[in-house]
Image (cartoon, rainbow over all chains, first blue to last red; front, side, top):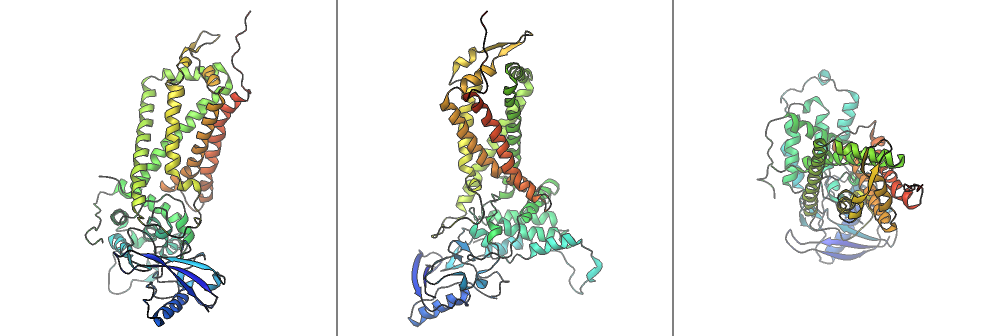
Length: 259
Length: 231
Protein backbone atom coordinates (compact mmCIF):
# COMPACT_ATOMS: atom_id res chain seq x y z
CA UNK A 1 0.00 0.00 0.00
CA UNK A 2 1.04 3.54 -0.72
CA UNK A 3 -0.10 6.17 1.75
CA UNK A 4 0.01 9.92 2.16
CA UNK A 5 0.33 10.83 5.82
CA UNK A 6 -0.41 14.21 7.39
CA UNK A 7 1.24 14.06 10.82
CA UNK A 8 1.23 16.64 13.60
CA UNK A 9 4.79 17.65 14.48
CA UNK A 10 5.63 19.71 17.55
CA UNK A 11 9.16 19.79 18.91
CA UNK A 12 8.19 20.52 22.53
CA UNK A 13 5.41 21.54 24.93
CA UNK A 14 5.72 25.25 24.17
CA UNK A 15 6.78 25.01 20.53
CA UNK A 16 4.43 25.87 17.69
CA UNK A 17 3.28 22.75 15.90
CA UNK A 18 2.37 22.07 12.28
CA UNK A 19 1.07 19.32 10.01
CA UNK A 20 3.85 17.56 8.08
CA UNK A 21 3.28 15.46 4.97
CA UNK A 22 4.98 12.13 4.33
CA UNK A 23 4.63 9.61 1.53
CA UNK A 24 5.00 6.04 2.71
CA UNK A 25 5.32 3.10 0.30
CA UNK A 26 5.22 -0.67 0.73
CA UNK A 27 2.95 -0.64 3.76
CA UNK A 28 1.62 -4.13 4.44
CA UNK A 29 -2.15 -4.33 5.01
CA UNK A 30 -1.32 -6.91 7.70
CA UNK A 31 0.73 -4.47 9.76
CA UNK A 32 -0.79 -2.65 12.69
CA UNK A 33 -1.15 1.11 12.68
CA UNK A 34 1.77 1.47 15.09
CA UNK A 35 3.92 -0.82 12.93
CA UNK A 36 3.15 1.53 10.05
CA UNK A 37 4.32 4.40 12.28
CA UNK A 38 7.48 2.41 13.12
CA UNK A 39 8.07 2.00 9.38
CA UNK A 40 7.68 5.74 8.89
CA UNK A 41 10.13 6.43 11.72
CA UNK A 42 12.71 4.02 10.30
CA UNK A 43 12.53 5.86 6.99
CA UNK A 44 12.83 9.22 8.72
CA UNK A 45 15.81 8.05 10.75
CA UNK A 46 17.55 6.60 7.68
CA UNK A 47 17.28 10.05 6.13
CA UNK A 48 18.73 11.61 9.29
CA UNK A 49 15.39 13.19 10.26
CA UNK A 50 13.73 13.31 13.66
CA UNK A 51 11.30 10.37 14.12
CA UNK A 52 7.66 11.05 15.06
CA UNK A 53 7.14 10.71 18.83
CA UNK A 54 4.07 8.68 19.84
CA UNK A 55 2.98 6.71 22.92
CA UNK A 56 2.77 2.94 22.91
CA UNK A 57 3.41 0.16 25.36
CA UNK A 58 1.65 -3.21 25.41
CA UNK A 59 0.49 -3.13 21.77
CA UNK A 60 -2.24 -5.59 22.62
CA UNK A 61 -5.02 -3.15 23.46
CA UNK A 62 -5.00 -3.32 27.25
CA UNK A 63 -2.61 -0.68 28.61
CA UNK A 64 -4.18 2.56 27.38
CA UNK A 65 -0.88 4.10 26.27
CA UNK A 66 -1.48 4.55 22.57
CA UNK A 67 -3.52 7.53 21.59
CA UNK A 68 -3.63 9.48 18.29
CA UNK A 69 -6.63 10.91 16.50
CA UNK A 70 -6.73 9.22 13.09
CA UNK A 71 -8.81 10.96 10.42
CA UNK A 72 -10.72 12.79 13.12
CA UNK A 73 -11.45 9.72 15.27
CA UNK A 74 -9.54 8.82 18.44
CA UNK A 75 -8.02 5.35 17.85
CA UNK A 76 -9.15 5.45 14.21
CA UNK A 77 -12.12 4.05 12.31
CA UNK A 78 -12.67 0.67 14.05
CA UNK A 79 -15.14 0.41 16.91
CA UNK A 80 -13.95 -0.90 20.28
CA UNK A 81 -10.32 -0.84 19.19
CA UNK A 82 -7.18 0.92 20.37
CA UNK A 83 -4.75 2.41 17.85
CA UNK A 84 -2.31 -0.49 18.38
CA UNK A 85 -5.04 -2.99 17.46
CA UNK A 86 -6.08 -1.03 14.38
CA UNK A 87 -4.67 -2.70 11.28
CA UNK A 88 -3.74 -1.17 7.96
CA UNK A 89 -6.36 -3.26 6.17
CA UNK A 90 -8.76 -0.61 7.48
CA UNK A 91 -7.29 1.64 4.78
CA UNK A 92 -6.93 1.45 1.01
CA UNK A 93 -3.97 1.92 -1.26
CA UNK A 94 -3.56 5.63 -2.00
CA UNK A 95 -5.42 6.77 1.12
CA UNK A 96 -4.56 9.99 2.90
CA UNK A 97 -4.40 9.69 6.69
CA UNK A 98 -4.43 12.58 9.13
CA UNK A 99 -2.72 11.79 12.43
CA UNK A 100 -3.10 14.25 15.30
CA UNK A 101 -2.61 14.20 19.07
CA UNK A 102 -5.52 14.04 21.55
CA UNK A 103 -6.65 17.64 21.96
CA UNK A 104 -7.62 19.07 25.36
CA UNK A 105 -6.31 21.80 27.62
CA UNK A 106 -5.93 19.13 30.32
CA UNK A 107 -3.85 16.96 27.93
CA UNK A 108 -0.96 19.27 26.91
CA UNK A 109 1.17 18.09 23.99
CA UNK A 110 4.60 16.92 25.15
CA UNK A 111 6.00 16.21 21.70
CA UNK A 112 4.43 15.40 18.30
CA UNK A 113 1.64 12.92 19.10
CA UNK A 114 2.52 12.44 22.77
CA UNK A 115 0.24 14.16 25.27
CA UNK A 116 0.52 14.34 29.05
CA UNK A 117 -2.42 12.42 30.51
CA UNK A 118 -1.28 12.97 34.10
CA UNK A 119 -4.63 14.67 34.74
CA UNK A 120 -6.25 11.20 34.71
CA UNK A 121 -3.74 9.94 37.29
CA UNK A 122 -4.56 12.86 39.56
CA UNK A 123 -8.31 12.19 39.22
CA UNK A 124 -7.70 8.57 40.27
CA UNK A 125 -5.44 9.73 43.13
CA UNK A 126 -8.26 11.98 44.34
CA UNK A 127 -10.55 9.05 45.11
CA UNK A 128 -10.10 6.00 42.90
CA UNK A 129 -8.86 3.79 45.70
CA UNK A 130 -10.33 1.58 48.44
CA UNK A 131 -9.48 0.86 52.04
CA UNK A 132 -8.07 -2.65 52.36
CA UNK A 133 -6.33 -4.55 55.08
CA UNK A 134 -2.98 -5.45 53.65
CA UNK A 135 -1.35 -8.73 54.47
CA UNK A 136 -2.98 -12.10 53.98
CA UNK A 137 -5.60 -12.23 51.23
CA UNK A 138 -9.19 -12.58 52.53
CA UNK A 139 -11.31 -15.64 51.73
CA UNK A 140 -12.62 -15.06 48.21
CA UNK A 141 -16.22 -16.10 48.87
CA UNK A 142 -16.59 -14.11 52.09
CA UNK A 143 -18.08 -11.07 50.35
CA UNK A 144 -21.00 -12.04 48.12
CA UNK A 145 -21.76 -9.65 45.27
CA UNK A 146 -24.91 -9.93 43.12
CA UNK A 147 -24.09 -11.10 39.61
CA UNK A 148 -25.53 -8.01 37.91
CA UNK A 149 -23.49 -5.70 40.18
CA UNK A 150 -20.33 -7.69 39.54
CA UNK A 151 -20.97 -7.52 35.78
CA UNK A 152 -21.59 -3.76 35.84
CA UNK A 153 -18.50 -3.16 38.00
CA UNK A 154 -16.46 -5.27 35.60
CA UNK A 155 -17.77 -3.39 32.55
CA UNK A 156 -16.66 -0.14 34.20
CA UNK A 157 -13.34 -1.60 35.32
CA UNK A 158 -12.55 -2.36 31.66
CA UNK A 159 -11.64 1.36 31.25
CA UNK A 160 -7.95 1.59 30.41
CA UNK A 161 -7.77 5.35 30.92
CA UNK A 162 -6.58 6.09 27.38
CA UNK A 163 -8.40 9.44 27.12
CA UNK A 164 -10.21 8.80 23.81
CA UNK A 165 -13.45 9.97 25.47
CA UNK A 166 -11.87 13.35 26.20
CA UNK A 167 -10.35 13.54 22.71
CA UNK A 168 -13.67 13.06 20.91
CA UNK A 169 -15.92 15.05 23.26
CA UNK A 170 -16.93 18.43 21.87
CA UNK A 171 -16.39 19.75 25.41
CA UNK A 172 -13.16 17.80 26.09
CA UNK A 173 -14.96 16.36 29.10
CA UNK A 174 -13.54 13.51 31.16
CA UNK A 175 -16.97 12.44 32.39
CA UNK A 176 -16.96 8.96 30.81
CA UNK A 177 -13.55 8.17 32.34
CA UNK A 178 -14.58 9.54 35.73
CA UNK A 179 -17.90 7.72 35.60
CA UNK A 180 -16.17 4.40 34.86
CA UNK A 181 -13.97 4.79 37.94
CA UNK A 182 -16.85 5.88 40.20
CA UNK A 183 -19.30 3.30 38.86
CA UNK A 184 -16.75 0.46 39.19
CA UNK A 185 -16.24 1.05 42.93
CA UNK A 186 -19.86 2.04 43.61
CA UNK A 187 -21.03 -1.42 42.49
CA UNK A 188 -18.84 -3.48 44.84
CA UNK A 189 -18.88 -3.55 48.67
CA UNK A 190 -15.15 -2.87 48.77
CA UNK A 191 -15.85 0.66 47.50
CA UNK A 192 -18.40 1.39 50.23
CA UNK A 193 -16.22 3.11 52.92
CA UNK A 194 -15.12 5.99 50.66
CA UNK A 195 -18.22 5.98 48.44
CA UNK A 196 -19.45 9.52 49.22
CA UNK A 197 -16.07 11.19 49.59
CA UNK A 198 -14.75 9.50 46.44
CA UNK A 199 -17.26 10.95 44.00
CA UNK A 200 -17.00 14.45 45.47
CA UNK A 201 -13.19 14.47 45.43
CA UNK A 202 -12.93 13.03 41.92
CA UNK A 203 -15.49 15.48 40.52
CA UNK A 204 -13.60 18.37 42.16
CA UNK A 205 -10.35 17.09 40.68
CA UNK A 206 -11.89 16.83 37.19
CA UNK A 207 -12.89 20.51 37.48
CA UNK A 208 -9.42 21.48 38.70
CA UNK A 209 -7.89 19.78 35.66
CA UNK A 210 -9.91 22.10 33.33
CA UNK A 211 -11.92 19.35 31.60
CA UNK A 212 -15.29 20.41 30.18
CA UNK A 213 -18.74 19.31 31.35
CA UNK A 214 -20.91 16.52 29.93
CA UNK A 215 -23.63 17.26 27.34
CA UNK A 216 -24.76 13.60 27.13
CA UNK A 217 -24.11 13.51 23.38
CA UNK A 218 -22.85 9.92 23.58
CA UNK A 219 -19.85 10.34 21.25
CA UNK A 220 -17.45 9.10 23.96
CA UNK A 221 -19.00 5.63 24.15
CA UNK A 222 -18.71 5.27 20.38
CA UNK A 223 -14.93 5.78 20.32
CA UNK A 224 -14.13 4.11 23.65
CA UNK A 225 -11.92 1.07 22.90
CA UNK A 226 -13.60 -0.69 25.84
CA UNK A 227 -17.08 0.57 24.89
CA UNK A 228 -17.81 1.97 28.36
CA UNK A 229 -21.54 2.75 28.32
CA UNK A 230 -23.49 5.91 29.05
CA UNK A 231 -25.12 4.04 31.97
CA UNK A 232 -21.99 4.73 34.00
CA UNK A 233 -22.45 8.49 33.50
CA UNK A 234 -25.96 8.00 34.82
CA UNK A 235 -24.50 6.22 37.86
CA UNK A 236 -21.93 8.98 38.38
CA UNK A 237 -24.69 11.62 38.42
CA UNK A 238 -26.73 9.61 40.91
CA UNK A 239 -23.71 8.99 43.15
CA UNK A 240 -22.82 12.69 43.07
CA UNK A 241 -26.39 13.78 43.86
CA UNK A 242 -26.45 11.35 46.77
CA UNK A 243 -23.06 12.53 48.07
CA UNK A 244 -23.83 16.25 47.99
CA UNK A 245 -27.22 15.57 49.61
CA UNK A 246 -26.17 13.27 52.44
CA UNK A 247 -22.45 13.64 53.02
CA UNK A 248 -20.95 16.53 54.96
CA UNK A 249 -17.26 15.63 54.69
CA UNK A 250 -15.20 18.08 52.70
CA UNK A 251 -13.82 17.16 49.32
CA UNK A 252 -10.77 19.03 48.15
CA UNK A 253 -9.24 18.99 44.71
CA UNK A 254 -5.54 18.33 44.58
CA UNK A 255 -4.67 21.49 42.70
CA UNK A 256 -1.08 21.64 43.96
CA UNK A 257 0.29 19.03 41.61
CA UNK A 258 -1.74 20.08 38.57
CA UNK A 259 0.30 21.25 35.60
CA UNK B 1 -19.08 28.35 46.07
CA UNK B 2 -19.71 27.86 42.37
CA UNK B 3 -21.07 24.40 41.56
CA UNK B 4 -18.87 21.75 39.93
CA UNK B 5 -19.33 20.66 36.31
CA UNK B 6 -21.47 17.72 37.44
CA UNK B 7 -23.36 19.89 39.97
CA UNK B 8 -23.99 22.56 37.33
CA UNK B 9 -25.48 19.94 35.06
CA UNK B 10 -27.74 18.68 37.85
CA UNK B 11 -29.05 22.23 38.34
CA UNK B 12 -29.34 22.62 34.57
CA UNK B 13 -31.47 19.46 34.46
CA UNK B 14 -33.62 20.49 37.44
CA UNK B 15 -34.33 23.99 36.06
CA UNK B 16 -34.89 22.48 32.60
CA UNK B 17 -37.45 20.10 34.11
CA UNK B 18 -39.25 23.03 35.74
CA UNK B 19 -39.38 24.86 32.40
CA UNK B 20 -40.52 21.67 30.65
CA UNK B 21 -43.40 21.29 33.12
CA UNK B 22 -44.40 24.87 32.38
CA UNK B 23 -44.22 24.23 28.62
CA UNK B 24 -46.55 21.23 29.06
CA UNK B 25 -48.93 23.14 31.35
CA UNK B 26 -48.98 26.11 28.99
CA UNK B 27 -49.75 23.77 26.09
CA UNK B 28 -52.62 22.13 28.00
CA UNK B 29 -54.01 25.62 28.66
CA UNK B 30 -53.59 26.79 25.08
CA UNK B 31 -55.27 23.72 23.61
CA UNK B 32 -58.49 24.78 25.34
CA UNK B 33 -58.68 27.26 22.46
CA UNK B 34 -60.22 24.43 20.46
CA UNK B 35 -63.02 24.24 23.02
CA UNK B 36 -64.31 27.60 21.84
CA UNK B 37 -64.40 31.13 23.29
CA UNK B 38 -66.19 30.25 26.53
CA UNK B 39 -63.75 27.46 27.44
CA UNK B 40 -60.46 29.31 26.91
CA UNK B 41 -61.75 32.63 28.22
CA UNK B 42 -63.03 30.96 31.39
CA UNK B 43 -59.65 29.27 31.76
CA UNK B 44 -57.94 32.67 31.43
CA UNK B 45 -60.32 34.07 34.02
CA UNK B 46 -59.45 31.23 36.44
CA UNK B 47 -55.74 31.90 35.94
CA UNK B 48 -56.25 35.56 36.84
CA UNK B 49 -58.26 34.51 39.90
CA UNK B 50 -55.27 32.63 41.30
CA UNK B 51 -53.91 36.05 42.30
CA UNK B 52 -50.80 35.72 44.49
CA UNK B 53 -50.39 32.04 43.55
CA UNK B 54 -50.00 33.07 39.91
CA UNK B 55 -47.17 35.37 40.91
CA UNK B 56 -45.45 32.64 42.91
CA UNK B 57 -45.54 30.46 39.79
CA UNK B 58 -44.35 33.32 37.58
CA UNK B 59 -41.45 34.22 39.85
CA UNK B 60 -40.49 30.55 40.22
CA UNK B 61 -40.47 30.18 36.45
CA UNK B 62 -38.45 33.38 36.06
CA UNK B 63 -35.91 32.09 38.60
CA UNK B 64 -35.68 28.74 36.75
CA UNK B 65 -35.10 30.59 33.47
CA UNK B 66 -32.46 32.86 35.01
CA UNK B 67 -30.58 29.94 36.58
CA UNK B 68 -30.85 27.82 33.41
CA UNK B 69 -29.41 30.69 31.35
CA UNK B 70 -26.58 31.62 33.70
CA UNK B 71 -25.56 27.96 34.01
CA UNK B 72 -25.61 27.69 30.21
CA UNK B 73 -23.23 30.64 30.02
CA UNK B 74 -20.81 29.27 32.63
CA UNK B 75 -20.90 25.70 31.26
CA UNK B 76 -20.42 26.80 27.65
CA UNK B 77 -17.49 28.94 28.74
CA UNK B 78 -15.97 26.05 30.67
CA UNK B 79 -16.44 23.75 27.69
CA UNK B 80 -14.92 26.08 25.12
CA UNK B 81 -11.89 26.69 27.35
CA UNK B 82 -11.36 22.93 27.70
CA UNK B 83 -10.13 22.62 24.09
CA UNK B 84 -8.10 25.66 23.03
CA UNK B 85 -6.76 23.96 19.89
CA UNK B 86 -9.06 21.86 17.71
CA UNK B 87 -8.43 19.19 15.10
CA UNK B 88 -7.15 19.90 11.60
CA UNK B 89 -9.13 17.01 10.11
CA UNK B 90 -12.87 17.39 10.55
CA UNK B 91 -15.10 14.36 10.30
CA UNK B 92 -18.66 13.39 11.22
CA UNK B 93 -19.36 13.01 14.91
CA UNK B 94 -19.64 9.32 15.83
CA UNK B 95 -23.15 9.54 17.26
CA UNK B 96 -24.14 12.93 18.63
CA UNK B 97 -27.20 14.58 17.11
CA UNK B 98 -27.18 18.04 15.56
CA UNK B 99 -29.60 19.07 18.31
CA UNK B 100 -27.24 17.95 21.08
CA UNK B 101 -24.36 19.98 19.68
CA UNK B 102 -26.37 23.18 19.24
CA UNK B 103 -28.19 23.52 22.56
CA UNK B 104 -26.49 26.88 23.11
CA UNK B 105 -27.79 28.30 19.81
CA UNK B 106 -31.32 26.88 20.03
CA UNK B 107 -31.49 28.04 23.65
CA UNK B 108 -30.83 31.66 22.72
CA UNK B 109 -33.25 31.52 19.80
CA UNK B 110 -35.96 30.18 22.12
CA UNK B 111 -35.23 33.00 24.59
CA UNK B 112 -35.57 35.57 21.80
CA UNK B 113 -38.92 34.02 20.88
CA UNK B 114 -40.11 33.99 24.50
CA UNK B 115 -39.32 37.71 24.79
CA UNK B 116 -41.28 38.43 21.60
CA UNK B 117 -44.14 36.15 22.67
CA UNK B 118 -44.46 38.02 26.00
CA UNK B 119 -44.46 41.37 24.19
CA UNK B 120 -47.02 40.05 21.72
CA UNK B 121 -49.69 38.18 23.71
CA UNK B 122 -48.89 38.69 27.40
CA UNK B 123 -48.09 42.39 27.64
CA UNK B 124 -49.56 43.24 24.20
CA UNK B 125 -46.92 45.90 23.56
CA UNK B 126 -46.71 45.06 19.86
CA UNK B 127 -50.50 45.03 19.44
CA UNK B 128 -52.14 47.35 22.04
CA UNK B 129 -55.47 46.92 20.25
CA UNK B 130 -55.71 43.39 21.78
CA UNK B 131 -56.48 45.07 25.10
CA UNK B 132 -59.83 46.29 23.79
CA UNK B 133 -61.10 42.76 23.16
CA UNK B 134 -63.85 41.99 25.64
CA UNK B 135 -65.73 38.76 26.20
CA UNK B 136 -69.10 38.29 27.82
CA UNK B 137 -70.55 34.81 28.24
CA UNK B 138 -74.25 34.00 28.07
CA UNK B 139 -74.25 33.38 31.84
CA UNK B 140 -72.93 36.87 32.54
CA UNK B 141 -69.26 36.13 33.23
CA UNK B 142 -66.95 38.52 31.44
CA UNK B 143 -63.26 39.21 30.94
CA UNK B 144 -60.52 39.56 28.37
CA UNK B 145 -61.35 37.89 25.05
CA UNK B 146 -58.31 35.62 24.69
CA UNK B 147 -60.05 33.64 21.98
CA UNK B 148 -60.39 36.60 19.61
CA UNK B 149 -56.87 37.73 20.44
CA UNK B 150 -55.51 34.37 19.26
CA UNK B 151 -57.61 34.57 16.08
CA UNK B 152 -56.39 38.10 15.35
CA UNK B 153 -52.78 37.25 16.18
CA UNK B 154 -52.63 34.23 13.95
CA UNK B 155 -54.48 35.77 11.02
CA UNK B 156 -51.16 37.32 10.02
CA UNK B 157 -49.17 34.74 8.02
CA UNK B 158 -45.89 36.42 9.03
CA UNK B 159 -46.60 35.89 12.74
CA UNK B 160 -47.73 32.31 12.13
CA UNK B 161 -44.45 31.65 10.32
CA UNK B 162 -42.48 33.15 13.19
CA UNK B 163 -44.29 31.02 15.77
CA UNK B 164 -43.77 27.86 13.74
CA UNK B 165 -40.05 28.54 13.25
CA UNK B 166 -39.73 29.11 17.01
CA UNK B 167 -41.40 25.75 17.64
CA UNK B 168 -38.86 24.08 15.35
CA UNK B 169 -36.09 25.44 17.59
CA UNK B 170 -37.97 24.29 20.67
CA UNK B 171 -38.35 20.84 19.09
CA UNK B 172 -34.59 20.68 18.42
CA UNK B 173 -33.76 21.81 21.96
CA UNK B 174 -36.17 19.41 23.66
CA UNK B 175 -35.38 16.42 21.44
CA UNK B 176 -31.98 16.31 23.15
CA UNK B 177 -32.85 18.03 26.43
CA UNK B 178 -35.42 15.62 27.80
CA UNK B 179 -33.36 12.42 27.46
CA UNK B 180 -30.23 14.27 28.55
CA UNK B 181 -32.04 15.60 31.63
CA UNK B 182 -33.13 12.08 32.58
CA UNK B 183 -29.52 10.84 32.36
CA UNK B 184 -28.18 13.83 34.30
CA UNK B 185 -30.70 13.22 37.06
CA UNK B 186 -29.50 9.60 37.17
CA UNK B 187 -32.89 8.10 36.30
CA UNK B 188 -31.76 5.76 33.55
CA UNK B 189 -31.14 2.06 34.07
CA UNK B 190 -30.50 -0.73 31.56
CA UNK B 191 -34.19 -1.67 31.60
CA UNK B 192 -35.64 1.77 30.84
CA UNK B 193 -32.70 3.14 28.83
CA UNK B 194 -34.25 2.71 25.36
CA UNK B 195 -37.55 4.15 26.56
CA UNK B 196 -35.95 7.21 28.15
CA UNK B 197 -33.80 7.82 25.07
CA UNK B 198 -37.02 7.91 23.05
CA UNK B 199 -38.70 10.21 25.57
CA UNK B 200 -36.87 13.30 24.25
CA UNK B 201 -37.83 13.06 20.56
CA UNK B 202 -41.37 11.80 21.34
CA UNK B 203 -42.18 14.48 23.91
CA UNK B 204 -40.59 17.17 21.73
CA UNK B 205 -42.77 16.06 18.80
CA UNK B 206 -45.97 16.03 20.90
CA UNK B 207 -45.17 19.55 22.13
CA UNK B 208 -44.36 20.72 18.59
CA UNK B 209 -47.57 19.34 17.08
CA UNK B 210 -49.63 20.71 19.96
CA UNK B 211 -48.30 24.23 19.79
CA UNK B 212 -48.20 24.47 15.99
CA UNK B 213 -51.79 23.22 15.66
CA UNK B 214 -53.20 26.48 17.06
CA UNK B 215 -51.71 29.06 14.62
CA UNK B 216 -52.19 26.65 11.72
CA UNK B 217 -55.84 26.04 12.60
CA UNK B 218 -56.45 29.78 12.64
CA UNK B 219 -54.52 30.55 9.47
CA UNK B 220 -56.11 27.70 7.51
CA UNK B 221 -59.55 28.74 8.70
CA UNK B 222 -60.31 25.54 10.61
CA UNK B 223 -61.28 27.62 13.63
CA UNK B 224 -63.57 30.53 12.90
CA UNK B 225 -63.80 33.87 14.70
CA UNK B 226 -66.84 34.66 16.84
CA UNK B 227 -69.60 35.98 14.62
CA UNK B 228 -71.91 38.42 16.28
CA UNK B 229 -75.19 38.04 14.47
CA UNK B 230 -76.99 41.25 13.88
CA UNK B 231 -80.72 40.83 14.41
